[in-house]
Image (cartoon, rainbow, N blue to C red; front, side):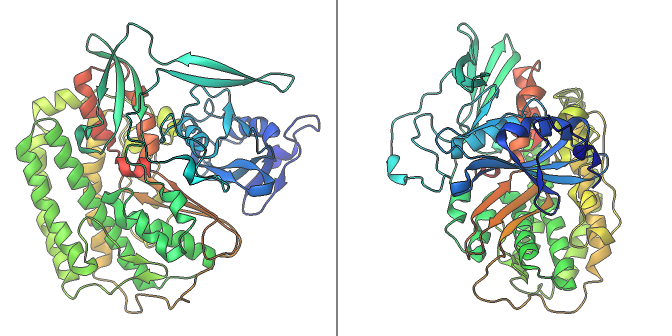
Length: 540
């Protein structure tokens, strides 16, 4: 990476003293981080915040790890911001530089108690307002939070913090909803089949003026659990995140661990993993089609989609033993070889699906009601998609070429020919069409691999106890809803010191307020359906 401009920072500038920590990774003190972040965004062109990970480094203090990418050049950089103050950890916000940082900083506050100066909404994101302590701190005491059965009452106010020149902090109380606004709740009773999530929506007539997201109803503390599990034990938890992309999630974690171990996976495994990921993508997109149709009242199309999804699940079950939950990928390979009928049945599935997809378009896509409700509704611009980090079909519908399979090829994706499906409208209809076209591209990828799976082992022989060398590692895959990433920081033990999952859904739900503002309340279900977030992946 050409970072000569960083070395030209004048000596009096606060970001002058940064130190390279290897692999494009830099450490900067908290008080100098904001200036460096601005230079990275404006001069370095790092416009995509891939991941933000809150950290407790023990005696070194608290901080955050920022994975950044330049979408024009494909360059990546990792910045580590550290504050030594364990009593009152402060970091400057970058939510005005990358809008996706707003929810990520709230998550870091929720889990570590790190307050981000000038952040507009410093509330907890996942945990209750009356939660005591910060659970991902290394010195957290679980006894502080006994089981409480009382109902949580959402507060219509939030806090922000300003840093004064003398070093003092001023706390401001900000009102979320003014008295007199008409506020309704959408959820948390499973709105639009995505999971238990609540939107508090302020209406003017039937027009949406504000939308406040409430997460955490199925938060399970998965990242905290990983700190007490061995690396092979952590694999099972990925299947419960985006359960419609279980194979892809586990693939990312296996890749990250294999990267740390320096393990080269056999070519047969790479073929099998790629095919399984694309079958999972077809499975997920068929469910997307079905549920969107049901949400909009098209029950015939709903039944068609579920009928055909069962054919995919039958193939997966025969080899992996699972239908919804896929536990197939292992560190260094897969748990068993493919079923003897796997190749034949996959080819039969593709031959069946091609004409069936045309039937979907006749039944639903071309329907005048569907087109009237989807076209021009819930527009997300390309600039906003990048700023929020809204990857997957949502980003590509806005014209952002954000496919990890193209940006950072892994498995067999660098050796197969397929198109990255792009639209420019950024509306509900474009998001719908991206996923329908991606089913065709998934079949195209599978066809290039299915008759050419090489012979060889399906698993590398591994030691029973796995220890990743000390260091930090990041790996990502193109999940069914966007980039799913795994960040591991290791101290050389058999347990990860910190394991962070880059949710595909958190950036998607964070942009819902921007997409929905000005739309009608009746459009909210269609907007949420085409953004296609899955809540267990958000809550973790």
